[in-house]
Amino acid sequence: MSRAEPPAAGAPIRLLIVDDHPVVRDGLSGMFSPDPGFEVLGEAADGAAAIRQALALRPDVILMDLRMPGMDGVTAITELARLGVPARVLVLTTYDTDSHVLPAIEAGATGYLLKDAPRDELLRAVRAAAEGQAVLSPSVAARLMTRVRAPEPEPLSQRELEVLELVAAGSTNREAARRLFISEATVKTHLLHIYAKLGVGDRAAAVAEAFHRGLLPGRR
Image (cartoon, rainbow, N blue to C red; front, side, top):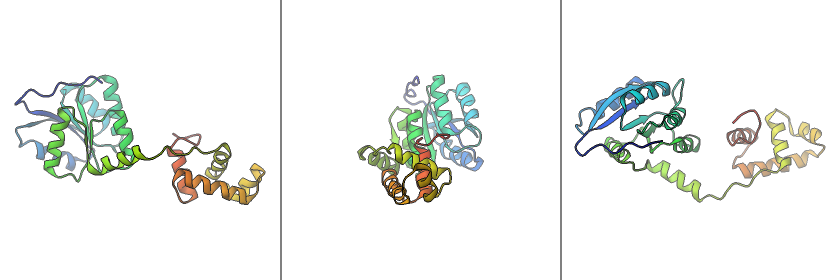
């Protein structure tokens, strides 16, 4: 993605606000508009509209929600990068889980803030984003640090994957044992190893985490 030059000294930071809730858009617009350091160019209710607005208005910073009907925020960020839109994207959302944070940052977001951020923090974040600085809420920064420091997860063995696929298909331990020609006790042992490797505590969570990691066929 090509990057815009920071706004000229004294020029307001031009904003595009993207959120599917009108009350949130109104609140953000009302927060920035009275400040002469900012200019709200427009608003959008989904990712597709955000892309159209960004191409037409050429904002400096886009405040982007993630969960929206139609095109979501991560898809929009990816498309903005593909199109070479130079605006910085600052994610503003209520979600700080790995499954939200990492895809947004990998797609090209400059920063990631939560909607409960105080007004002064949000204004500072937008100014920093306009200058090309990475901006992360404290909880998101802590989550990323923990992930960076964590060792690489141990991969599942072929047999463990076979057990997990059967469990995901609804098989009981006894049925899985019969299908794989192993004992039911061995199936239970494999499941315990799977839980430990995936960091979960039960069958449903193991299946959900395996789908999230792309370990099971049919869903990525």
